[in-house]
Image 1: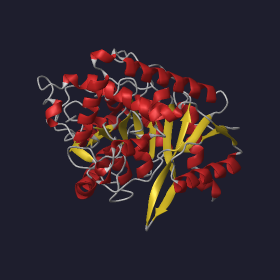
Image 2 (image 1 turned 180 degrees about the vertical axis):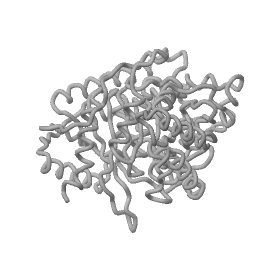
Image 3 (image 1 turned 30 degrees about the horizontal axis):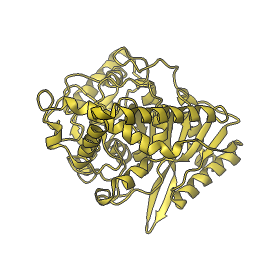
Length: 444
């Protein structure tokens, strides 16, 4: 199939079905033209980029030249990006087609997809429930069949959380693997751009394209190509954390047991000290860094003044950050949070000297009904990220892959398995994820 025909088919499907999902805020008006040009280039040269034939959604906090990059906020409602983020440059150079900008929690502040100024995103795999956030639209667009793969950002679980709820694959790379130049940041010490796909190979392919050193982002680093290969004698660390729904725990334990029998995995329970402080540590850092990052949105250069037009969750984080960073505290709370972050990082390094990976559920609870999160206490909502936040604090890589479904009344709700590996061990992590993905085929 020509790329142009594929893009046209996606656009028709989006036109018919996305009104009920609300996964895409803006479509790329030039998508068909760009697809035609890629088809013509292939006919002339016979050469294909790695993303030839792939149609891609982009979270609305990543700059794509000429497209509305509004972070799902009224603050930047009419902001059109004047340049491409580094990851977008790489996608275009490898013949990927950007279909449009996806919905998300406003300024990536949220874990449910309910906090967009342009309405919540539906979960295509559990209509009426949240898709998870903050990269809600990217996950939903892939799950609904509106694009092949998608970009998201993950600060405390914003790729893995919706991947779990929407029954797809979502990768949070190691801190520094992917350039963040062109990302409208939430938290400079935690943000990472990552990928979604309907399978491990597609998500890994997109990550391979966007990774690498970038002079415009001093935190980025060079790394070897990410290759999926057979991994033998895998030592798996099982991390037990309180507060996980028993039905979810049973699904993950069953998958681990199947893999143990099929691949002769070596299973060991592990303990990460100070992990019970992860959520509190994370939000101290996010509040302080988000407050600093949003000082540019004063209504003079970028859109409107943020405090006058943002939603409740964004305002909560701004006010919290304002308090934490007051001069009289001399950075005391922020420094303490950074110290705990370092302790958690050291703890993960210790555990990874004993095991190849750590496995646990992605989210401790099932996705709630849309609208319910707006009635919940912030600490109840924040608890949904308790299992994903530690990987961001440690700077390691983590992936969520489909693990099965939990029966909740008459509904069957997707559940994700999270696999963590040490920093810059994406190849090993995704190879292990591929083994789990193949369990059903091998069983047959």
